[in-house]
Image 1 (cartoon, rainbow, N blue to C red):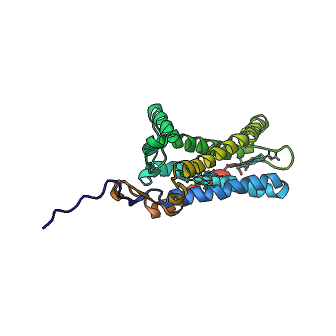
Image 2 (cartoon, rainbow, N blue to C red):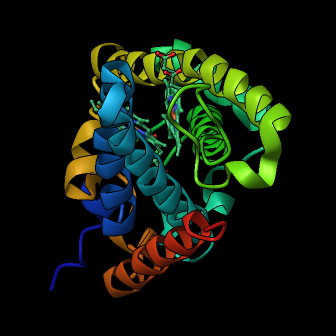
Length: 231
Ligand code: HEM
Ligand code: HEM
């Protein structure tokens, strides 16, 4: 009887990467951010829809923060938030094909841009609750802020538009760079949840879909009460 053969060193497996919670979050976020930009540029009555997009984005962000503690392996902040040494190593790996290492979730450098996007969008959604446009529109918590603070938040809300646009442009450029330079398709796992990789499938797991749905619903209810809290 021959001994069982160990797998070839470069054999690949289907490894679970982005769970349904992260994927729902990501693709809904994309649609809502685009819709928030389109509605605000239309202005007028479309500002109501701009505000709704903002509330929905806030609910998604609350969900994502909680999911960062209870979600699947690669959804957790502890799996991708790293110190400066790891960030520098991943920058070197990014620029040098021979040092590039297969990474399953966000690599330490990509994680920085993810955290920056989450922070910029969170600021935009929260500041939006307090703003006013001097004409017909007031955010639902305007009364709590008062005119002076509301005006200041309005200027920051405008300024942060540039930050969000720059971060999204960087995000898309990085994905294109990985695709063309490293032949690494990051988009497929964000669609299917699975990546073909050399790691063992058991090395990571997806979070519970039922829990993700409950937490998404709870975040939506929480934001609903917040938005109506000053009425
Ligand atoms: C408004 C536009 C977008 C925003 C605000 C955005 C935001 C984000 C965020 C916050 C994450 C982190 C996901 C998480 O850990 O929860 C992420 C990851 C990702 N996004 Fe986007 N995204 C946008 C557009 C896109 C588009 C158009 C694509 C595809 C072409 C894309 C592909 C990806 C991929 C592949 C990842 C995973 C990156 C990795 O493997 O580290 N995103 N995005
Ligand atoms: C993450 C969510 C949000 C995004 C991405 C976003 C995006 C933007 C952008 C890009 C602008 C500047 C438009 C321009 O200068 O042409 C803007 C303006 C504005 N936003 Fe938001 N916003 C969000 C949430 C909110 C929320 C929740 C509210 C209120 C409930 C709100 C109310 C406003 C108002 C009143 C303006 C000023 C419009 C004007 O000057 O005519 N936004 N927003």
